[in-house]
Figure (cartoon, rainbow, N blue to C red):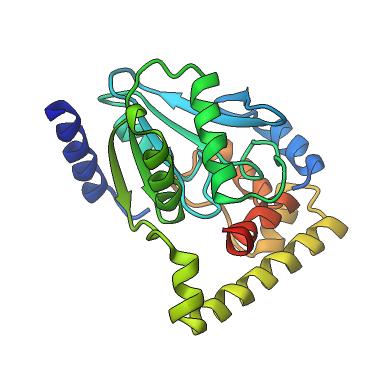
Length: 244
């Protein structure tokens, strides 16, 4: 237990010393430009992409925030890999992972993670689970349902429990803002369905920004195209908001 607590302290130190940091057709195009850095693991009726680096126990499992992929975890994962094993993954509908069945509820997402870790045969358990933002909500549920598999949990700006109920009951202005964001995501999905980018340049032109500097040069194109997946927007918090 003391070793696990020390690992959490080291993770916190790493975090505070670091800088702040589709459709099937689009996914195929992305894989042609840059194959997934990890492996695709069968979790039942779809496959999820998991990327593990480093060696040591316990393994650290990174759960990204809304819309995050293994590419967003890159700088932190590289630091942690220097002293233990660390895995990031793409939730269904994001990154290199398949879409997965709808709706993408919290429970379905947590079940996916449990199956993924089992089928990927991550050697070291229990894990230290790190949840970022919305990933913190998934982390809390995962830990509560799998206590024997978890040595520790670290939440970074984690979404609190009962968040969706809270904004419904006490913060109607936040609910309205979330509904407006959902409408925006739906519109994006429909636009991309009718006219998906056929190149990295078209994706950059559509979104109006380029991949962050921390993304390796050979993966910058993939970073942009992965955000042009229609199912990325279909699953981007829409189902959590409506089916939590």
